[in-house]
Image (cartoon, rainbow, N blue to C red):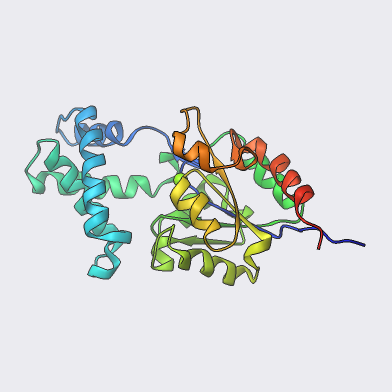
Length: 251
Ligand SMILES: [Mg+2]
């Protein structure tokens, strides 16, 4: 009998694909600062964080690994830079706040599971698919997933910190395929970033799907991604996989 593609592995992005922050970074930072007697506007912190994050990630990529930083030190420095940009130059006053923020973001209570995540993951496993995580994240992810009750769905969790490089670097996808002992042609990646997830996975020969939110898609992305690869919600994944299996060339 003719044989069709049989997907074996699904890899998942985590942030804004299956989990998200309970509240915006600016609000969280402002609230922790207030608890330490320091009043800073949430909007100023939100804006400063965005700017500081871009510069810090550029200067010290993947949590500063190649510069000998620990990911914890990387985050503490980023938080200090954020408060500095938001108009609080006194680093000594920020250090206890930064320590607390680092610990708080390690806790599952700072994160929430996105709607449909559990059902979709269970549905995938029921079909015999193996699931794994490929995430640009630091070492805290594993414990966060345990705390949120999601860890049990995945064979392994591969973070960019553990892999030594972030998506879309092909090496992190190759590493995951190696860990799973699966060829790229029977693996698909699901994520919300066009360059890191959708394109990154395709560059190594995997299939991929792009999770989109309620925001309109950038026109260049809309023009480059076939409609059947776009997931308006997680509940669209299983039908999209069915379509992919059905439309794959008979070998
Ligand atoms: Mg993401």
